[in-house]
Image 1 (tube, rainbow, N blue to C red):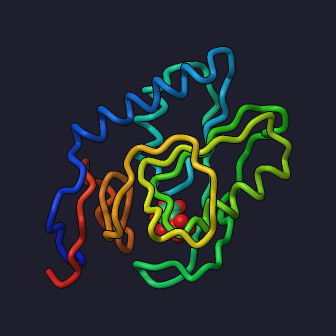
Image 2 (image 1 turned 45 degrees about the vertical axis):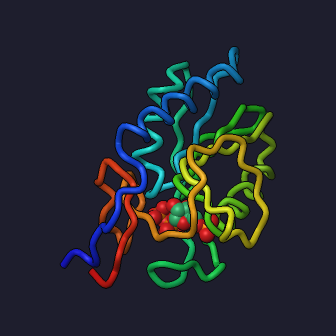
Length: 177
Ligand code: PRP
């Protein structure tokens, strides 16, 4: 059974699409001559990634990586494992990591550390959502879609127990509901 219920829409589909278009244009402008390697951190950033890649709209390589932080359904424990690694070599390439949300920062910290060791020409991060109040590890984020307060959010790729990713908006989940 579907766990909980979405009690409030935090970001509408229209707000998200408009902001993703802005982010895409900005990234394209900042890398006018580059063939970017964009990395989708599965599964959460999948929907954002597809829309953002269309918004960037310049020649690029798309890569996929899966990092999972372990803990219960709403909080991470601090242990991050790489479950699926990249196919491509990123040495000398301009790389953009695409995240759906930065919460404690642990996932991104681990991924940045790993990818830096592979000597990319540059390494940037774009995250649709940022929850600075929850940060445990400081991580650099070059492009942020929206800063949000400490709500448990689902939709547009974000899940609770793998549910709700398909929603076209970002909503606040009420688990009592
Ligand atoms: C979520 C989210 C980020 C990470 C953020 O991933 O997609 O990658 O947590 O949390 P942090 O800043 O505290 O590390 P999750 O491990 O839940 O996997 P998913 O993307 O498959 O949902």
